[in-house]
Length: 420
View 1 (spheres, rainbow, N blue to C red):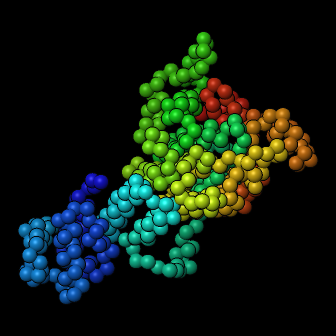
View 2: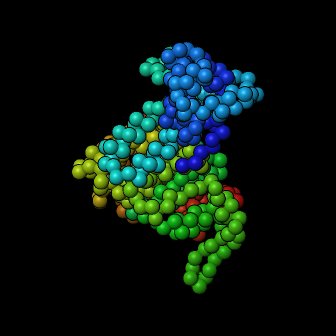
View 3: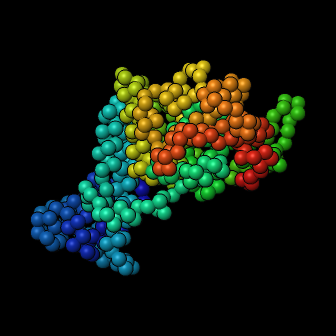
């Protein structure tokens, strides 16, 4: 992996010109991907820890391979720095993140079990450019209020009203029967995300990327920007280039040709967050992921996976949407009908079920709740908030209309949003 070597060079220049920084630096020689810089750092760090000073003549006498010429060049280079400690901290962060990314990519292609992969990722995640603390002061905790939480709006009016949207650092689980609209609503949420300048990554294990983009392009366009092929009865954008400009370099689709191995998908998330500034990830869906190499018990593997996804959302400060199919059931779908271990919904911060309002749903709804809600049952689809940890909301039903031509979910009939 190639990285910006100027970052490592600048960090070394600061360290050489402010040798007291060796006292507290979290850098280690292996974090440098430039071998020359790595070797210089190793010898300087080693000497400082023994002598509390730097004397490159003595270092050269101890190490004949010490690159004194490069050291002198770095020592002479002056930087316009006002707060070297703050700047060094930022450089250390970048160097360490590049080191982590390099190893995540390497581990993703290694033949490891899930436990082995998770253990190594956990060790990597503990590397930080700040000193480890086991506690926080009350004033530090008080600063972490809702005012500092970033929410990505869903575009679904009542979701944004009641739970404020999708908070960074959280995990949402989605479920619903076949044809209920899970993928459709999440694709639309992806468009809403990028229109708020939050880049998004989608893993779609069941759809070809060309089919996925065809549907997303319809949602981007809206009725006024579509043409209708009457012979074959399908819709397509009037201006393909303008349509693609909405999502290009903002929406990223996982390359299914790489396979559906969970390690590769996890690496793709790390890579997209680091290199593409992705803030929202959609994983559609659990059943299309290859977990076969990571344990014998599928429920144990699912628990490990959902735990890793939840930790990743917090660690990377992103929002992850995870689609899980329900068990086959003839009854009204509830949270406990979601297929797999109960930890899928216990660990998640939010749980949603998409219902398609057909005759079966109307009958089951009336039997479950002993009432006939004519207004709610007049919608085409319903997004149910089964669980929201922050606000404590559950069993909230949000009606949506479905526009066939554009595959859009609408808050009210004839709603028209301008994405282009």
